Image (cartoon, rainbow over all chains, first blue to last red; front, side):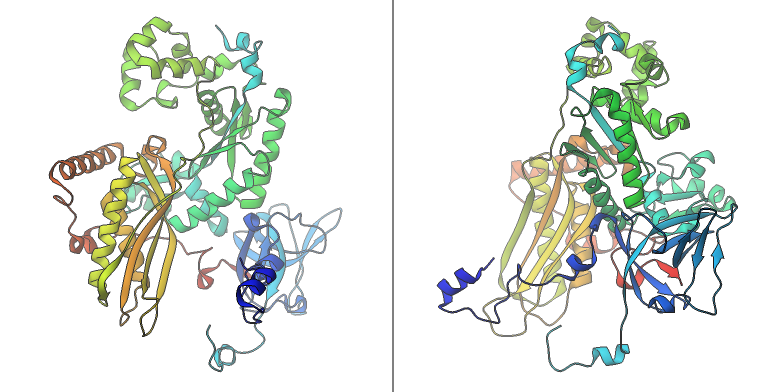
Length: 140
Length: 434
């Protein structure tokens, strides 16, 4: 690992282009608090558009977090993964979509229901893949 | 000497081993990412789809035995809509690491015993609190990783294995059994057949039964003199452990962490055939070194690159780790390495160096035989490797060697029913409906 001081000593002046692993920002550090409990999943469907979750987006799911009221959660409902906002009242649990065309889902006693993890971040591409791949010469 | 009696002396208080074991580990891994499997019978097959190496509770209830050949049970499984999977070692390796790391939240004293088992030392927890502590461990691991585990706690490793087995198989314990608060330890030993005691193989179990020793309690009560005469010192140690006297500490990983074999080529090579040969050579060397040290490797890296100094396009590959069945078996190492090479090789580069690195080394006496490979197959493999090693030592290196070209077809593993790369591929992530 090169520190600023050692770069000064070895090269006479610090090169702004010199990569330094310790100084580089790591998105994992920003997005993944609990690596052993964190998983990535792919979204399909549009029921959570209001929360900024689009079809095809990547979700970061943290299983170490306690699912509290108003969290966005990935749940298993009757054998299928679903992402919704969690509404916990004293009487019942409701999965809330964030799209007017979708209805709230109250969890019934007979449902096979489990909260799989808390969705912490969504990664959403802002442009088409075609656009994202068109670059000037630059190593990828 | 009874166990409750030994509870009074110091040895009892000084040691507390917890054996953590993942329930039906491979099946549980599949279930984390596929909710449809939760109430369905599921089995996972060995690395070449030969036999069944992991079964869900529902599959066990159907009478499908561990290690059963796939073809024998296929009709039964199809009739009962059993979900059948090839081994997805990348997935299981990742999930194993997560479970093992999760355990570090609770104790620094951990021995990873196999892909799905670890011994912990919990002597710093008050004896009466140990089962409560273990419940917290269990709940946490299940919540964070999705993998259900069982925990057995006892003053010796052998007893912790027994406690774990009972915790797992009797629902009344709900996954945790501490012999520190079990009222009658002897009753637990009585329901443990000798063949289910750690370290007792099939043959020894038959011999013991012939002597009228049917369960762990019988063995615990056998006279020392008889044991020493019939079972040697190892047997005596096992019996002492059954009585509550620890004879084995936590074994940490072998000091040797990794083994490398690599070399620069005489002149640059472009063809995959040449690289394949060199990789086979390195795999052979690594197999020899592993067997010399009585170790098996779990992870393998393949490395090849163009020159750092010559002109021309550059390609530098270090691919791995790929998870392999813990092995020191040369054909398996060759097959694993060449598969990686095939996947990562790009033509039209002048390669100047290749090599293989293996790490995550475990002592080969620690490998549990029945998990992946039928015992006899493994014995045969070992015999073959010993023969080759001894011939090569007598007659000089490479008297007997593996024809690398033959490796390509016959050793490539079958995996027709493998699940998605849920963790290791962006294109295969679990899908959730919004």
